[in-house]
Length: 266
Image (cartoon, rainbow, N blue to C red; front, side, top):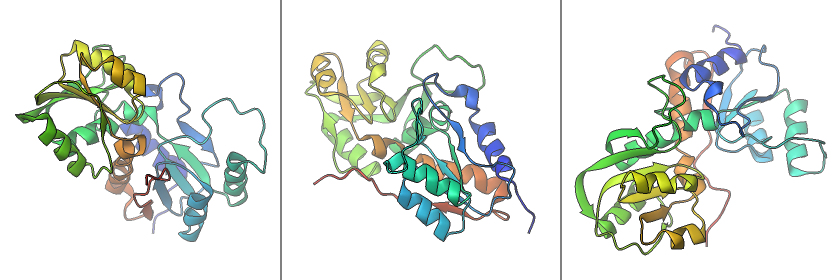
């Protein structure tokens, strides 16, 4: 079997969603490790934990690709007894490379928001904002706007949304909109785009996280629906696997972390 270096795997991901697409506050890209080593296997997950490192080791993977970066803010020290420190130390000791594709993948046309649009069945899908920094046709930017093929009642749409995304809950405000046709969305923490959704006259704005007062303050302006951060983004793992399968499926074993939210609801 031909050998594939870790850097080749990374290059393929960055063709789909270049690192320069990430937001200025983000830390996408190589977190730690040696990209010149041969890739024995790649393990794809949403978040990195000690358990993820253990599972990667069990499957003989020396590359973990996550959506969220484990090092997000400035790192001034590494406490071996902290949760982050234990992950870093275990990865280094076991020669595991950690790589993440976060907001650059969010901003891709077929990234987080594109997948949500597909799952919901939206048509006429386009960017929610007009401030697209990059002219690449595969660049979407934060947030997206689309339409349902047919207008349906709000109650029926929320039930439909819950079924399509396999949600345990939907939190929404008491806006009196009766019918849903025009849908705005942003996976993860997308509440900063509420005003954009209002400007675009969307019937509903869907995001992973919306604060309590944002729900209340906008109840006369737009229907807001919070579906959960994990629930809005975990599908991106499938997209990463699909990207890599096109080129590396015969050379590098790819493993997908089964859907499991570490934040529990009772």
